[in-house]
Image 1 (cartoon, rainbow, N blue to C red):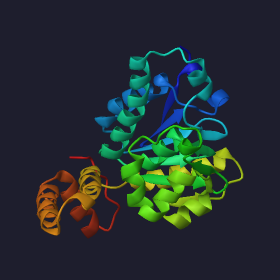
Image 2 (cartoon, rainbow, N blue to C red; image 1 turned 180 degrees about the horizontal axis):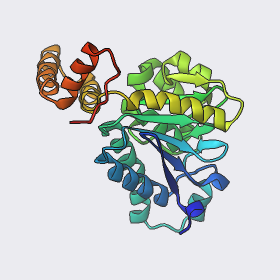
Image 3 (cartoon, rainbow, N blue to C red; image 1 turned 180 degrees about the vertical axis):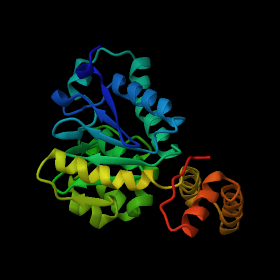
Image 4 (cartoon, one colour; image 1 turned 30 degrees about the vertical axis):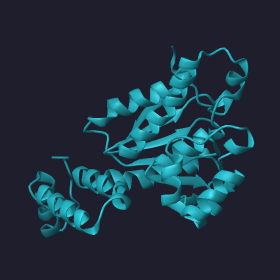
Length: 266
């Protein structure tokens, strides 16, 4: 398979790994190969010390329009194959949510259905101001996935989550920021300008202490599932752990020496 035929492209930019859904002729509609490639890329980057942050985006004019409806219409898959395909999204989104490194979804165009769900599973959602995000499942008799029934109410509250899911209307980057769904709505004349702004954001994440970020992400993901007492106990353990690392000492040294810290992830 040559580079152009790979379902997901991987490219390092400084300490940021860009993963690009690469089916632009189908507006990056997902299939089993895309899900498999995403899982493989995420698993491979997990232990790489040179990867400090990740960006997930789409090639061409769409982030991802969700399921490949043309493939669905062919109806040639067995029940087992259909379940494995559907499970693929669940596995990718679980990895995105639980991943120890920060992940930025860079929504450059349409993010619909499974594409919208992949974007929300990332830690940060950056959208072009004219990009469109939506969950059209109820309008085609399908069902939401990727943990969106758990993630979306946390992002926007139950009232807005029900409206977004049940009506399935598309919203722009500006509207997504207003709702608290997206973190940034970026005005960009073209894709290169958008990517540059996303890279600048991701590089800021890449300069932070890796172990501190991994622990913080883990604890924030558990915020709605435990008591204040449990949170305070977990934070105490986290502070004790971080204070025993080389990165903690580097942070102290950099502060006293009035320079930027260079973290090693140890």
